[in-house]
Length: 82
Image 1: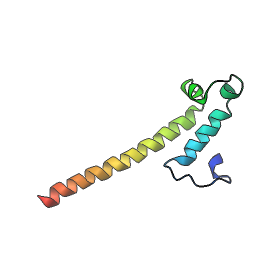
Image 2: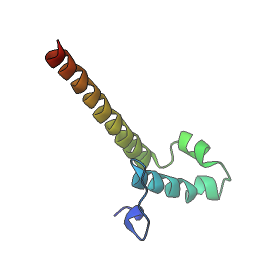
Image 3: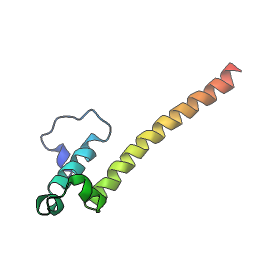
Image 4: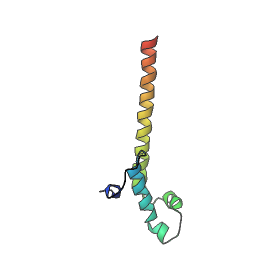
C-alpha cells in the first residue's frame, strides 16, 4: 500500500498522493543519501521510475478530462446555438 495513505493529511492538489510517494522515494534513495545528488538529478538518472511514470500518467489523465470537457462545451455551443 502506498505510504501516502498512512497518517497523512489530504493534499488538495491533483495526484498529491503519488507526488508525495515519488518525493519520499527520491529522498530515501541511495542516489540522494549516499551519492549526495539532488533528487532532480536522481530522477533524471532513472531512480523511482515506476512512481514517476504513475505520477505523469495521473497528471496526463487530468489534462485529458479538461480537454474532453472543453471539446464537449464547444460542440454543444456549435450544435445548439447555431
